[in-house]
Image 1: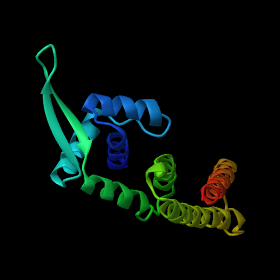
Image 2 (image 1 turned 60 degrees about the vertical axis):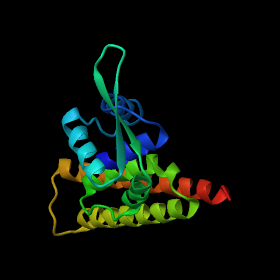
Image 3 (image 1 turned 60 degrees about the horizontal axis):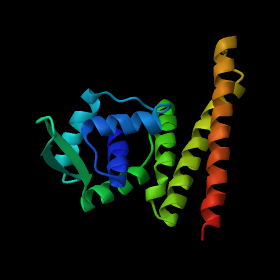
Length: 174
């Protein structure tokens, strides 16, 4: 997911690694808080794959800074990452879904519709799995397990409602 965030942010404007970390914190802190130890290798991978350009410049204090900007390949990669299949792991799915929704404004209207359909489909699959466990008479859940699963179903319902509202908004922006 860090690659999506980096490409999304430098698609808006050129940034240093510090600027990327600060922008992630400013816009996505409730979703993720990557360290420089996560951002730096991601920048190297993106640069190696031709997704970003690096411009080095000396500051007024004489310190060298690297500024990152997106390439045409980076824009294609960002769209591909936003539309690629979602994790079957529910924890990863929820985290990734929120980030993908937050970055969806770089996609075309049709791509946004495709993303929302994929997200809603996977969310319904996770909801179905959780409800099956809750309703299985042979699964003896503890009180706490049942409460967590019921809460998970509500979280999924909220995500589905969010997606459905965004679908309506996207359809209305013809």
